[in-house]
Amino acid sequence: MKTNRPVNSSIHQGFTLIELLVVVVIIGILASLVMSQATKMMEDARKLQVQTVIKDLRIAIGSYQVEYNRFPVDSSKLSGSSGEDAPEIQTDENSGIVTALMSSSSSDSSSGGGVNLNPRDIKFIDLPLAKNGMFGLVGAQAPYKLVDLWGQTYRVLLDTNGDKQVQNPDLKNADPKIAQNPTSPPPDKLPTEIAIYSVGADKTASTKDDVVSWRQK
Image 1 (cartoon, one colour):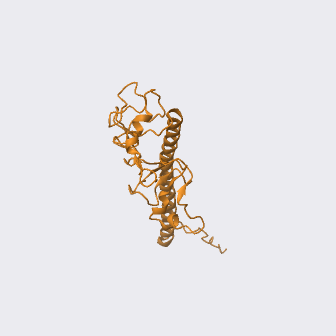
Image 2 (cartoon, rainbow, N blue to C red; image 1 turned 60 degrees about the horizontal axis):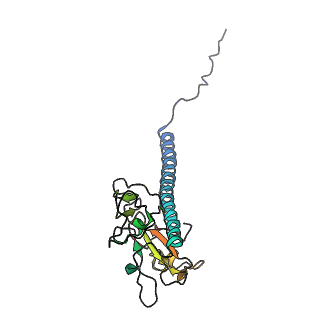
């Protein structure tokens, strides 16, 4: 009797070199997409942190203005030319703006010129101490310096000529999509008495990555 041998129907096991390469390429593409998205999310989170400080600082300056009927800066540093607003102020020790917004209970809150700009000893803002010179107050005692996540001071524009507006820094922005936007061109003046911005990760003013108080992005 003739016995038929069973046909070997086993499926070839394992992957070919081409299949492995395809898998590796796909994994690499997916990893790069995840990494780029994660990097963008981290950048957005850092900008949001800085934006929060900018908002708090703007509110604090406004509250000071209501309390004292002036800006928290020595009047000698607020002189503009030809009726224009005074030049932008940085949140460093020399301007005294951050010191004026802090309570003097635990330290001398006089500005660099020795003028106490907060005689009622009101604390208008809570700010953390900077770590390694980044994001917060540099120094535990007045005069205070406030820096962003990249160790740079914030820039403050104040309406010192009383026209309820300040010069728009976007007009000098190096990014043409901001400075020369045909759909929504930047106005010459911002309709606000207080505008604040951080120069961003590139540490250069008037560039695309500036974190500002007058734009959503």
